Length: 397
Picture (cartoon, rainbow, N blue to C red):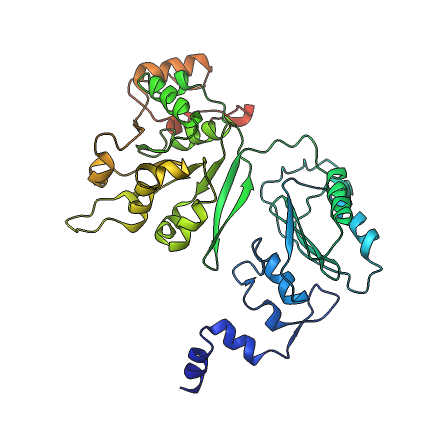
């Protein structure tokens, strides 16, 4: 009972722990001592690190001043960090701590290839540098954040130039950002999606060709909002087509995974999305979000938000487009979505017709016998009789 009363008094478990442990010090990966109270409310316990949105809060906790921030949105190599160290490490307040984790998107080296110790080309992962009093630099998700208070403009420009000097070249990034959610806060991580080797008229049925052209024209239009629904059974090419749209590179694309769909009803989602004007949101595997009310009177709150943003009062202000994909039958989807004029486009992906299957087999010289029935793209490119030893380029299912 005592602990329950104390937790209620401090409004949250984390605040209570902060109260109990205000004299405990955190020293791991840091050269200086900081109290736990400094970090309790801004530390992301799910990742064991600070979120990209917390560096300004961290600055305030350490220096007790509200900061300004300059963001540089590109990758830099590790020589950037080396030069920052040389510039500031003599200062009494200098400190640095890093978060090193596996990058699952790196290309693996051949076994016979000798590893080279080339630090200038290694990824610089999450890193926070306390340069001096009232000046911090953070590296999060492919961007540099310079956080400061009462620092000369010339010094900030000098740091910006160091970033520019060590910018990674020849690195093509999509206009794709992945939504993350932590501590009731939405944020974006820039990502990379490889361009699929597809041709719309070859890899999809003939009735999709005009629909695909309509979708692409609609997505390129400025100052327009709307909702696109792509559905059909697994393996028919929905995700591959989404990859194709992302690599058109014309608009800012924001991806939300299926496990975040329930967060669309969070009040903070509207605040977040108001900062993403003229963007395209991709929501995959959203059967539950779009499903019928099954006799109930209340529509899913997340769906209400999407309809208000794409076709309601907020649509003219935000100009946001949604692409929603799902595998469920159309009959299971809420009727409000299917109302005439509600959707900018809708398409059901089906098996390739027998003629299209055999045409694809012939044009790509696939090691598959002539077929007598329709097939999905996944079935074609994962046909059990195919020889993958040739390293044939697959569509990516």
